[in-house]
Picture 1 (spheres, each protein chain N blue to C red):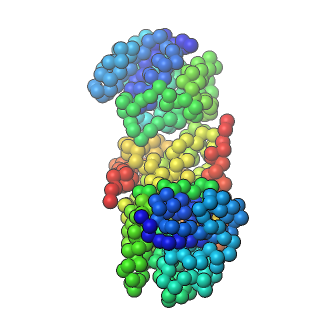
Picture 2: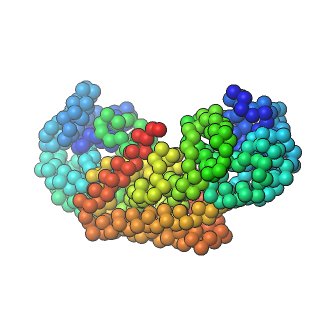
Picture 3: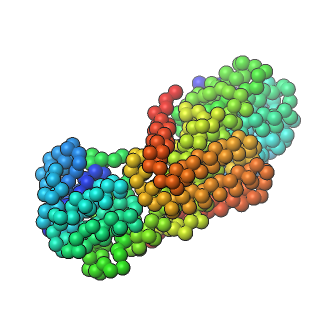
Length: 285
Length: 285
């Protein structure tokens, strides 16, 4: 169903590119344009024939009624500043940043004639870049939408409808609540996985050739690109630090139980962990 | 190639059962027998037609020239005691326990007429039990073999040949070195994953419905059966406690960097973690 006349994606890498492919596949917009800092990405999208790739931000958002900012989270602020003069009055702006509080603050530079509503689709991959984009990346994925208290209801609904059209399950909450949630379910686990692989590597018994699926799976996210994650972790520093403190506390508690050889307490804590982990596979909403 | 006249597996669950299937498929033994504490498992194996399932330990090891102890690691000691009077002189004994130091000590109750050489195949699954056994579980997997300094070379070679026949890559080291290695690559990650899921569950932002592949993968091993892991972690307590201390140290360092907003230091530590994690996928031996 056509929801927009022209969608413009600013930053057409893995996420932005997947939005182009998903929106085209589902016929959500009549026209598509994009901007990328990478000439290779731009060529990739222009070659498809149905995307207008631009090296100028101004040209890329011209006549767009939906603009999606998909630049790295620490670049969103400057992207807002650069785009502000060129946005069509009445157009909708969203972003896909993993942080919503800082993005909402940065969005204050946008003109009052446009509507900004933040989004965060919980989709991605360690494999970045346009060439890894695919049309079903958002299918059955969770997508946060974080309106401010004064955003018009019809704009919020349009953004919800957009993500639902791409196959996502949308969830509305404040930017602050979002940041607290992703600290728990994404940012703290990411930092923890990084700490775990660095710790294991320092141990005298570390033997890479013997490593099996367990350690590989539990540290897979630590292979993510560091500069993307510096931006995310620092923008959500307070919540992430709180999360890591709790990880340190639980790790120390488990260690103390092991040191004193308390089988009953160890069984109890491992059972609680097993139940908590198993419940993640049983969650349906 | 026939290596043995009769293989006996004591404890025919996931690992023990997979040994039966793998050894039959590769024609490593003329006859197979097994013991299980579970009547359902015994019936499962007996129904295959080519395994003699026994409820008596004595009967299960009769005439066996290779006996594989595949009971839970904290039961291996008592299994040795129960089996000791019934083992055929000259027979080879191995086990598949995740701990080798404690097993080697426990093996001192075995009669001098038999040869015990510990093994640890790095294979398994969260899905325990005979019904999840499969013939290719050991294919391309790493398998520790941990002879003592006085074990006869031909016995060690026979055990190596056995695991290689099942498709495993064998690695010889002392029981003590083994325990140090698995503390780093398996036991510390397991305890860390348990601590992480418990920490995340305690955070105010924990929202199970929004959890994606990242947290699920990084805590998957924490879904393992707790009583198996109580035995493992306590038998390797010194090394695991050392590993968890290092995890606490790395986590605290990362947290401190985040708290002081040091982008350069954060980028450096995340890059080190990414490189360490990526190198696990590039290991070939």
